Length: 104
Image (cartoon, rainbow, N blue to C red; front, side, top):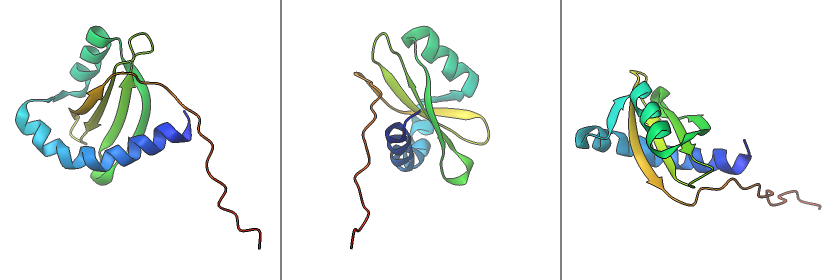
C-alpha cells in the first residue's frame, strides 16, 4: 500500500469514528463478516487499506478495480462494522511527499 492511501484512510478515520454512532442508529451497521461478504458479492470490492483509529476502531477502505466503486468502513472492537462513506472512481496513487529538509 502506498502512503497516500494510508493518509487518506487515517484522515477519514477521524470523521468515520464520529459518524459511527450516527451510522449505527441509521441501520448501516452489521457484523463484519456480513458487511465484507456483501461488499464483495454486490460490488466486487475487496480491502485496499486498513488503519487503527481511536478506541481500537479499525478503519478500512474497500474498492473494486473493475468498477471503481469504493467504501470506507469502521469496525468497533465488538466486531460490528459500519459503512461511513462510499463513492466511485477509486484509484491508487503514489504522490511523492514534499521536501521539508532545511538546507541552511
